[in-house]
Each structure stands twice: as C-alpha cells, then as structure tokens.
Length: 362
Image (cartoon, rainbow, N blue to C red):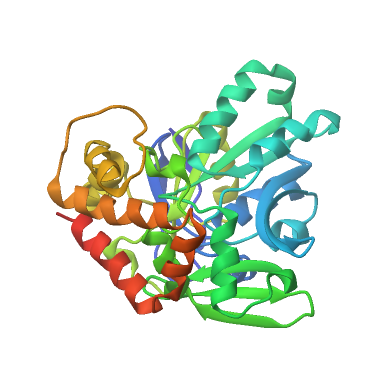
C-alpha cells in the first residue's frame, strides 16, 4: 500500500488521507479544469500523461482519435510529444484503433512512452512485451480504458452519412458525457464545430450496429492487464457531484507509483470506492457482460457463428438481449442490412438499445 498526500478538491469536497491499495478502485478527477473541459469524463488519463511527460518520465504517449484521411473517416494512433498533441486526442471515440501496430513501430524510437488502449489490447500488449524485452524497455506505462464494446470504422461512415456530414471534412471527433446526457462534438477542417446529442449516436452502438466480432465474445472490460485502468463511474452517489468523476485502479506497482505522484502534486483527487462496492453496485451489468452462456443460443438465433461450440443457454432475458444485439450486428455487415438500419427512425434504434439494457438487468 502507498500513502497518498491529500490533494485540494476544487469542487469543495473534503478529502481525507487514504492508503491506496494495488487493485482497488478509486474515484477522482484532474484538478486542472482545462483538462476536464476536453475530456469525456474526469480528465484522469490526460492528467496522467501530462504529469509523466512534463516531468521527463516519458518522452511521448501513444494516443488515438477519430479523424479523416484521404477523404475517409479513420481511427488513428499517434505518438504525441507535446501537451497539445495529447489533448488533441483527449476524449472517447468507442472505436477500435491501431494501437498495437503503433507500439510495434517503436523500433526506431529511442525514448519511453505511455500507451492508452483498450482492455483486450492491454492483454495483447502484455503478451507482446513478454516476447520483446527491447520493446518492453520503451513502454513505461499502459493505461486501459474501461470498455464494453467498440465498433469498426464503418460505424462512423454510416452515422455521418445519416446526419448529412461529409466525412472528408471531419478533423476530429470528441465525445463529452455527463451522467445523463452528453454531446458528440465534431471539429471540422474548416475550423467550424458541430454538436449532436450523444444518445442519438450511442443508441446504434448499444444496439450492436457495427459491433466488432471480438467484442461480442469479450468477458473482460476493466483493463486488468494494464498498469492503470480508468473509466466512467456511474454510481448513484456521484451523480449529484458538480464535477464528473472517473474511476481508476492502480494494477501494478508502477501504476500505483504513478498515481501517487499525481496525488502528491495535487494534480488528481482520489477517494476510496473499492472493487467490492463497484462489483456489488454493478452486479447485474457485470453478470450480463461477463457471462458467455446466453450468447451462444443468441448467436445461433441471430445467424452469427459462435466463438466455440456450446450448448448451455443461461439466462433467458440475457439471451433475448444478445439476440437483438447480434441480429443488428449481422445486419450491419451487409449493404442491404446497413440501409435498413439507418433508414429506421433513430427513436427505433434507441428503443432497441433501451430494451437490451432493460433485459440485461434481469
């Protein structure tokens, strides 16, 4: 355990001295308001990266964003060497990004980096670094984002088309979320900005449209293989707070040491949540997200090939939820299915997403 000094909480909440335990969950946010302004949640990831970069602990950070390349929407991973470069990639995009390719391209890079990635990528990165000691010396820290499913690039192609957006004109996409609402903010190459309600886009993702195949069979969502994992915290007691908090977990001694440095520098607030409390609060969501049994029957009903042969059915309500999700996933893989899904009123997609959510709670 590591003792953290008590930071000043800009929201006015009393912070108490605490002992941070490896593997436990804490809630907090970046104390610098400018970081929270560009973040999708509490600005914790940006705060970590800037803390390490500005103290010379790392020489760059592998960060990702949505942009357009050669007239098409693209998910890119970039090696950022400056504060501006890191903040340009702040915020969520819910899309698979080429992080591992960017790590493998570090052969000619002589410094150390921090890597922001998804839980599945963190596990693959750990395996890669075990095989390549020279590369392991370059990756100082990995930060995994909580994830319950990503989409492929065509998700944004179709959604932009539906909203009448020229994908070639999009310079970057940022998602800003509150507890109940949020915005998808598009920064255009001409300097203008367009904003859309987050739920109008997120309904498609939650309903399974353009879901990645590997996400359909994922059982691990909290980034256990990374040094630090960070994500949204939608616990009831935090919804009334004027500053949106993130959850974060120090998974390794280096991860805990890094968080200690931020708290000692009053760059990050931290208060104990505990994994046991988190698991109890979100037990139903965890059971739905982490149990494979209902997905096998659902895959057969939806016409999706299961990850492996399995005859166990599991929870009936979860099976129905996954059937809807998988059916939309299958439809989005064909031209006719895509036209059908995006011809539907967005309210219908939102209702499907709501139905999946309700069924998942049984």
